[in-house]
Image 1: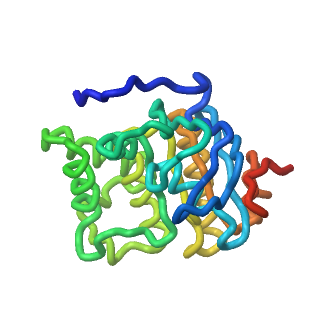
Image 2 (image 1 turned 90 degrees about the horizontal axis):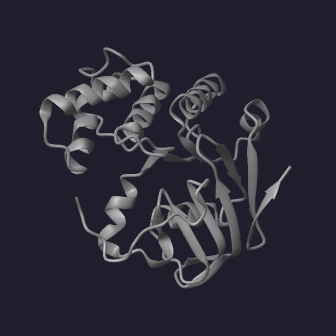
Length: 235
């Protein structure tokens, strides 16, 4: 177990993610000011806004890529406002990441892609690792796909592999940045059904940044909008 110099406490014991009056910075410039944001266990919410409005900067702040210098924030028990750089990898093990562009090794098998992440996050027992790979593939409806090359999978199947990868370390929160941006509407619906089912069954909180308002109408949840330097909850 790693020892952390400063004690870690959750700001709001019922929140997986909590921001209190936080300024979100990008290259020392304030992108979003005075952010207040809370996400409960098993809750899904959307982040919307035009390109350049601060959506990506907000997500980067959540997983420790951008620093917090004003206000207070916690994610999965880690205080972001006094988080030491050496503890950022520990924070990221508590966050599953799902991206629009998949970021998979196309010439590797599905299983090898997932085993690579387990190795990178400190797993040692090969039997346990193999068992976890099979488990998450079953969770996303890809049982029996572990030996298939990523390159032969459809876009929807590849995104399911990405979601399986995000689940490997059983994170309390998943960040999905335009997770359906490269998918057709029917496949996009399948991915949102899957994310919503995971939230219900495993109490996983999910933040979805999207431009696809059709998804918001079909899978309603709280919506926050980045606009004019603010992050505001909207109807």
